[in-house]
Image 1 (cartoon, rainbow, N blue to C red):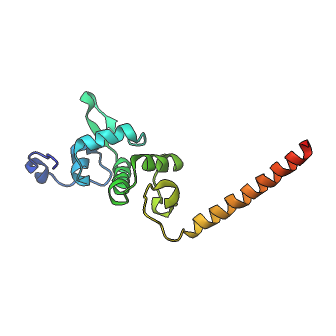
Image 2: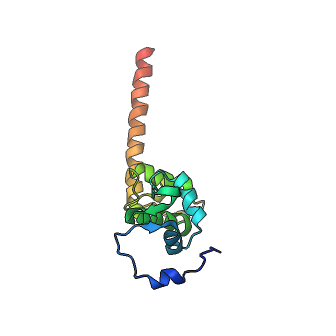
Image 3: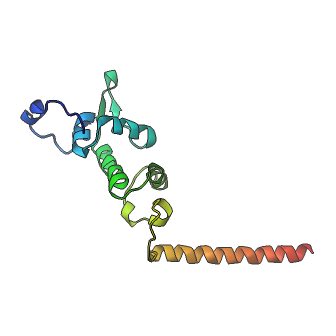
Length: 147
C-alpha cells in the first residue's frame, strides 16, 4: 500500500489548474503509485525529467504527468517490460504518442500467441522478405562473378 499521510490539508485547497506543476506526492497519488516508483522511473526513462528545486524537491510539468500516465498504462495494463517501454521512447524520440497504433510484435514481450498479425506487420514482413530475396540474388551474382 502507498503511504499518503494526512491529506486533510490538500482537501482544503482549491484544485490546481491543468497547467500547474505537481509535486511527487500529488503525482504518486494521482497514478496510485508509491513515490519511490516515480523516482525509479526517472533512472530508467530519461524522458521523465521533473524540475528540481532547492533540497531536491521535484515538480512535474503537465506533460511529465501525461508521459508518466502512459508509462504506467504500458507497464501495468498492457504488460510491457521496462525495456519495451524504453524502446518505444527511443523509437518515438522521447514521446509515446500513438503507442497503441504501433506494432505489438516488435515491442511487446508477451509469450502468448498473437493470432493474426496486423496489416502493417504483414506489409513490413513482405517488404523484408522482398529485400532478403534481393540480397540473396546479389550474393549469388557476386559469388558467380568471383568463380
